[in-house]
Image 1 (cartoon, rainbow, N blue to C red):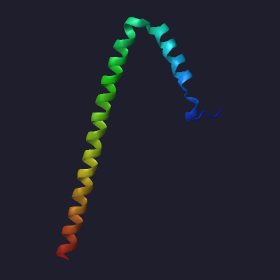
Image 2 (cartoon, rainbow, N blue to C red; image 1 turned 135 degrees about the vertical axis):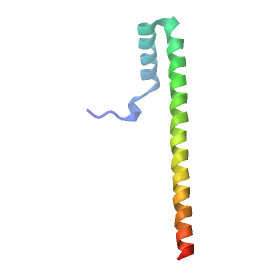
Image 3 (cartoon, rainbow, N blue to C red; image 1 turned 60 degrees about the horizontal axis):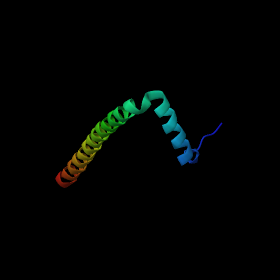
Image 4 (cartoon, rainbow, N blue to C red; image 1 turned 90 degrees about the vertical axis):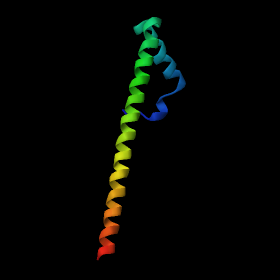
Length: 72
């Protein structure tokens, strides 16, 4: 069975929301949303740090190659 991203429709999101509301209840749902948002924020911050580190490494490699070419 193949599932495409087109299978995620607004109707399916509403169904997931209703099921989550039934399982966790209206009092717990905002807390879960807040926790999920802070987790996503931390993840983005960590991945941004990794990509910044990669950019720094690439820049250093290019500078090192340029210095080698100049000295030759």
